[in-house]
Image (cartoon, rainbow, N blue to C red; front, side, top):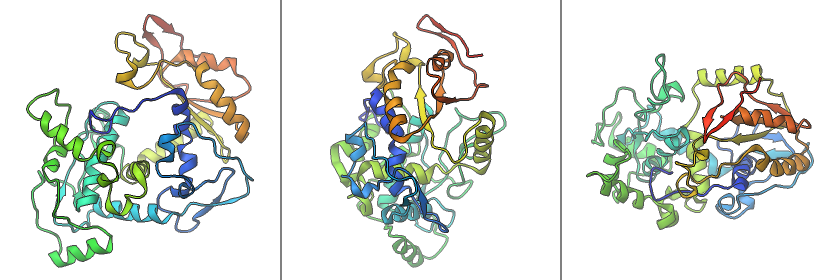
Amino acid sequence: RMSSRLYRPKVTIAMALGLALTAVLAVGVSALARKTNPERKCGVCLSMDQVPVDFIMKNKEFYPPNIQSERVCSRYNAAANLFQRQLAYIKSPECALHRRFSPRAMENGFGATMMSLVKPVEQAMTYGYCLDKPAQFKMWSSKRCGGWECFFSQIGQSNTTTNANIVKPKKSMDMAHQVAATSFLSERVDDKEECIAWWEVQYDTDDDQNAPLQENCAVLFSHALLGEAVLPPAFQDKGLFFTVSQITKGLYELAPKVQARIQEKKRRIGWPDNSPIIGLHVRLGDACIKSEHSVGEHGRHCNNLKDFMPYVRKMSKLYAIKNIYLATDSGGVLNDTLKYPQYNWIYDKSTRRGGILDKKIYRVFP
């Protein structure tokens, strides 16, 4: 849900694996190119400039052709480069635009929490606002660390209270506009400023007095209803998938300590070096509780490992990949991997799994 009750994507098995291929397709626009080496050797190479706008949203299952593994694939894309420059500017402490705000994350599942900040960022880039550190992220914090900084790099100025007020710029107004123009940003007067107040407090209203404001802002920034007009001006011809992908890449830059923990975990579970790997997520949580399950509500089915394996086999054969990283909340799914010994299953054995879901007990893998 993109911070709006108006957007409920349908998820199918094919889509689940198709989304795993998103990274493959997006390699041509993988954000800011590496300064020292913007190219790399890869077996699958397809720029998004070679396919129609929002291609991946209309084709949930897509398998790029496997080409020579030594072919050099450029990771540079001008539009992605420009997008990341703009986003880096508005979220930097040096942002000199004369308006700024701190969006509030709507805390639900971690993915939904992250996506709740997409529309606020779209408004900031479209109408010229500096961004300060998003509020909340308490649900996913611990006693040792609380808030945004537990996961992601610094955004904006610290200890800033805005409430969408006009604050004095750090530089002169002329300089602010000059910097904005250099960054291809502008402080537009045709703003939807009433939504700034909402982004700073947004929550699931449950039809209280703020429900009309929530619905209004959802409509004002609804791509389904208004199309490319809701996207930042310089990227309206790139589509929604490009925009959301670039926001996700640039906004959620992992904090150094999180990156270090990821590298340590990969080492601990035996992640292969310089070898391709298929990422597979088999979720048997609330989607498998009949009293709570509804395809229309959750957008997914209760699918076991066997339902995914036809797609795994197809990808494995096409790309000659035997390594599979498995993320799952079910010990039963880990047991089921024994039925497919031809693959190298990689997962974290220390993660707590199992329990009773829908009267079915899943035995934890030894």
